[in-house]
Image (cartoon, rainbow, N blue to C red):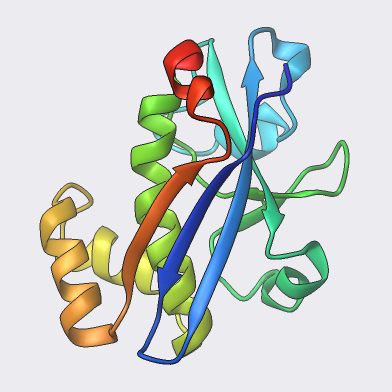
Length: 165
C-alpha cells in the first residue's frame, strides 16, 4: 500500500542542513515485504516482524548519494532485494505510523550526524551510551556533542496523520 512521504529536516551544524524524505510501505502480507524477511529480519533476535508492519523507503537523500555508504556500517541503510531502493535499516516491528515516526526521528538525527562525522553515531550513541531506549539522552548528546538536532518532522499532508495513524 502506498502512503504519503514524511519529511524530516536535521541541522548538523550552524551551516549544514540535511533533509530526509521517507516513504512508508505498509506490509500486510508476506508478499508485501520489500526487504527479504529471511535475509533481513530473521537473523536478529526479534525475528520477522508480525504483520501489519511498515518498511521505510528513503527517497531523499538519493540512492546515488547513499550508495558510497553501502557496506560501511556508517549509515543504517539496506537495499531492497526486490527493487534495489534504499530503505531504513531497522529490524524492529513498526506496527503503525506513530511508531514509525518515533523511529525516524532517531534514525534521521543519527544518519545526519553519521554522514557528517563519517562514523556510526546512531548505533554508537543510541545503541551504546543510551542503551537503545533513552531518546531524551540521545537527542541531548547529539545536540551538545555533535551539533545535530531535529528541526522539524512534518508530513507532506496533515490529513495523512489523521487517517493513517
